[in-house]
Amino acid sequence: MKTSSKELKIKLSDLDKTVIMLKAISHPKRLFIVSCLSNGERLSVREIQELVGLPQPVVSHHLTILKNAGVIVCKSKGKTKLHFIMNNPKSKYIRI
Image 1 (cartoon, rainbow, N blue to C red):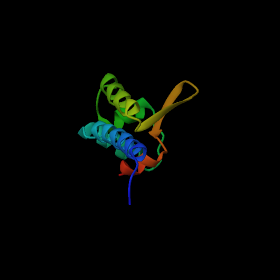
Image 2 (tube, rainbow, N blue to C red; image 1 turned 180 degrees about the horizontal axis):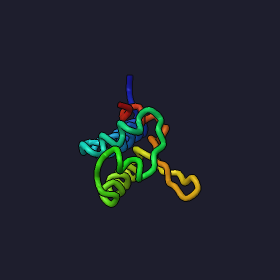
Image 3 (cartoon, rainbow, N blue to C red; image 1 turned 45 degrees about the horizontal axis):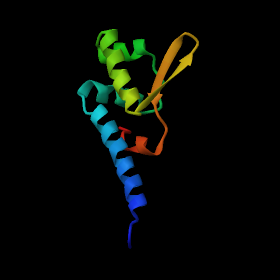
Protein backbone atom coordinates (compact mmCIF):
# COMPACT_ATOMS: atom_id res chain seq x y z
CA MET A 1 0.00 0.00 0.00
CA LYS A 2 1.44 3.33 -1.08
CA THR A 3 1.35 6.41 1.09
CA SER A 4 1.19 9.75 -0.68
CA SER A 5 3.60 12.53 0.26
CA LYS A 6 0.63 14.61 1.44
CA GLU A 7 -0.47 11.84 3.82
CA LEU A 8 3.10 11.46 5.04
CA LYS A 9 3.37 15.19 5.76
CA ILE A 10 0.14 15.10 7.75
CA LYS A 11 1.38 12.12 9.75
CA LEU A 12 4.72 13.85 10.42
CA SER A 13 2.87 16.96 11.55
CA ASP A 14 0.83 14.87 13.98
CA LEU A 15 4.00 13.21 15.23
CA ASP A 16 5.66 16.59 15.76
CA LYS A 17 2.69 17.76 17.84
CA THR A 18 2.75 14.55 19.85
CA VAL A 19 6.49 14.95 20.50
CA ILE A 20 5.89 18.50 21.77
CA MET A 21 3.19 17.20 24.13
CA LEU A 22 5.40 14.39 25.39
CA LYS A 23 8.32 16.77 25.98
CA ALA A 24 6.01 19.03 27.98
CA ILE A 25 4.99 16.22 30.33
CA SER A 26 8.51 14.79 30.64
CA HIS A 27 9.23 16.99 33.69
CA PRO A 28 8.24 15.20 36.94
CA LYS A 29 6.21 18.13 38.32
CA ARG A 30 4.36 18.66 35.04
CA LEU A 31 3.65 14.94 34.85
CA PHE A 32 2.26 15.13 38.38
CA ILE A 33 0.05 18.09 37.37
CA VAL A 34 -1.24 16.12 34.37
CA SER A 35 -1.95 13.12 36.60
CA CYS A 36 -3.97 15.38 38.93
CA LEU A 37 -6.02 16.54 35.94
CA SER A 38 -6.26 13.18 34.17
CA ASN A 39 -9.56 12.07 35.70
CA GLY A 40 -11.42 15.08 34.32
CA GLU A 41 -10.64 17.42 37.20
CA ARG A 42 -10.75 21.17 36.58
CA LEU A 43 -8.39 22.83 39.02
CA SER A 44 -7.34 26.40 39.77
CA VAL A 45 -3.70 27.47 40.07
CA ARG A 46 -4.13 27.60 43.85
CA GLU A 47 -5.50 24.03 43.98
CA ILE A 48 -2.66 22.79 41.77
CA GLN A 49 -0.17 24.72 43.89
CA GLU A 50 -1.43 22.97 47.03
CA LEU A 51 -1.21 19.54 45.39
CA VAL A 52 2.24 20.05 43.87
CA GLY A 53 3.74 21.98 46.78
CA LEU A 54 5.48 24.62 44.67
CA PRO A 55 5.29 28.43 44.73
CA GLN A 56 2.59 30.00 42.55
CA PRO A 57 5.02 31.47 39.96
CA VAL A 58 6.62 28.05 39.42
CA VAL A 59 3.22 26.38 39.04
CA SER A 60 2.16 29.08 36.56
CA HIS A 61 5.36 28.49 34.58
CA HIS A 62 4.65 24.74 34.36
CA LEU A 63 1.02 25.39 33.40
CA THR A 64 2.13 27.75 30.61
CA ILE A 65 4.40 25.07 29.17
CA LEU A 66 1.55 22.53 29.28
CA LYS A 67 -0.86 25.03 27.68
CA ASN A 68 1.58 25.97 24.91
CA ALA A 69 2.11 22.29 24.12
CA GLY A 70 -1.64 21.72 23.81
CA VAL A 71 -1.78 19.38 26.79
CA ILE A 72 -4.14 21.46 28.93
CA VAL A 73 -6.67 24.24 28.48
CA CYS A 74 -7.53 27.09 30.80
CA LYS A 75 -11.09 28.48 31.03
CA SER A 76 -12.30 31.32 33.18
CA LYS A 77 -15.08 30.73 35.68
CA GLY A 78 -15.77 34.08 37.27
CA LYS A 79 -12.48 35.35 38.63
CA THR A 80 -10.98 31.87 38.75
CA LYS A 81 -9.18 30.17 35.87
CA LEU A 82 -9.67 26.42 35.76
CA HIS A 83 -7.15 24.12 34.10
CA PHE A 84 -8.02 20.77 32.56
CA ILE A 85 -6.76 18.29 30.00
CA MET A 86 -7.63 19.20 26.47
CA ASN A 87 -10.08 16.78 24.89
CA ASN A 88 -8.52 15.94 21.54
CA PRO A 89 -7.36 12.77 19.80
CA LYS A 90 -3.74 13.25 20.92
CA SER A 91 -4.71 13.63 24.57
CA LYS A 92 -5.20 9.86 24.73
CA TYR A 93 -1.41 9.62 24.82
CA ILE A 94 -1.20 11.69 28.00
CA ARG A 95 -3.99 10.16 30.06
CA ILE A 96 -2.46 8.64 33.16
